[in-house]
Image 1 (cartoon, rainbow over the protein chains, first blue to last red):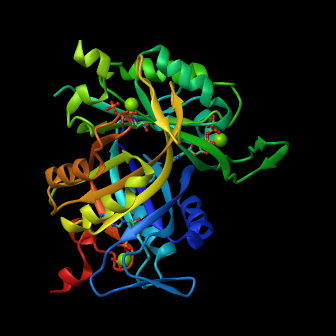
Image 2 (cartoon, helix red, strand yellow; image 1 turned 60 degrees about the vertical axis):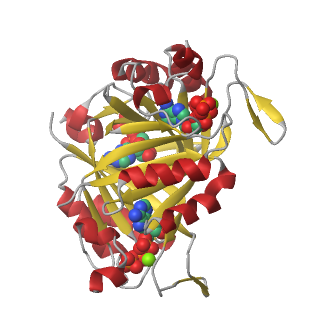
Length: 123
Length: 123
Length: 123
Ligand SMILES: Nc1ncnc2c1ncn2[C@@H]1O[C@H](COP(=O)(O)OP(=O)(O)OP(=O)(O)O)[C@@H](O)[C@H]1O
Ligand SMILES: Nc1ncnc2c1ncn2[C@@H]1O[C@H](COP(=O)(O)OP(=O)(O)OP(=O)(O)O)[C@@H](O)[C@H]1O
Ligand SMILES: Nc1ncnc2c1ncn2[C@@H]1O[C@H](COP(=O)(O)OP(=O)(O)OP(=O)(O)O)[C@@H](O)[C@H]1O
Ligand SMILES: [Mg+2]
Ligand SMILES: [Mg+2]
Ligand SMILES: [Mg+2]
């Protein structure tokens, strides 16, 4: 089975649309989005959200989970950095994890095929 | 320490009850449920939710996280596929991850024992 | 690249503040918090939430995700157990996962540096 990887992107809620388009442009076939609260401690720094300043922040963020196999991890990282970077504190973090298997429930297919577009699988 | 595994099931919100019962039936002792939004891009296909059609969908899904050790991963996959499959687009995906350790906070127990029913551990 | 680890803590919502302070005290620089529902099956036991008793429970919990590199995993586990333990059923679980990489979106930095306080990185 080819190596699969999960990428978690934690960024500003306002970046979802741009990120989604950037991911589809490089061939990502799906993603899972959650609303989370992010905490970052930075000595002497604060983050601004809707005009208010926070020191030990607990700010609304989105977490986007993306599993890839054919699309290179490096391509996801580059596209995500490009879509989410403003250069200001609060742009967020990306975490990369190993994954052992993927299954498409509808068909029972396992491995890389489970996360490929069914149109391409059938071809 | 015996190998532990995390299984993420992303499926239709309406399947939670059935899935929960299927998991308990095979000996799973706990699960963590989140409300998420799922995005799947399928060329030429659409998914229907509450009578509306979506192309690049961002649909309400549930994510169920299950950590197992004694219960075989294969048993979880089979039971989850059975509980969640309707045969229609939108049935969802399952992802399988390695895990290094588990801790029961109440007692400090680590490893497989942390996710066993305390009744069985004490016996 | 030094080994990085993700720690998921699933515990009572009321423990967030205490946990946050405990984590910052040992040098953790960030965390991601989600609202989840926890299911735990315990033969013959029930968990109490707001005066009500639940058998097969589906109770509000919080999930805290913490990625560390410099701070030892063992220190996080000890501090989390201390902050979250009441000794009663419902204290929760901790799960430990391997992680392959971390990226700071603002600067593009990768690895352990991505999760260090920028103040310390610049020094
Ligand atoms: N060590 C960590 N473990 C888990 N989640 C983290 C960690 N560090 C940061 N996060 C998550 O990422 C979000 C963004 O992190 P943080 O605020 O530290 O970065 P930033 O301000 O965007 O970046 P910068 O370091 O450039 O200021 C946090 O709100 C939190 O949700
Ligand atoms: N590559 C992926 N990475 C992360 N999450 C994904 C990925 N693919 C799918 N998902 C998640 O799983 C959910 C279901 O995926 P998708 O809609 O592609 O499958 P489906 O329509 O159920 O299956 P099918 O391929 O049979 O049409 C998505 O809404 C999304 O939350
Ligand atoms: N095997 C598991 N997989 C995934 N999540 C789990 C698992 N076991 C427990 N959890 C999560 O952890 C939460 C707490 O678990 P549980 O209720 O079993 O523990 P507890 O009652 O705190 O501990 P104890 O075993 O001491 O009674 C659950 O509500 C659920 O969210
Ligand atoms: Mg910050
Ligand atoms: Mg689909
Ligand atoms: Mg319990």
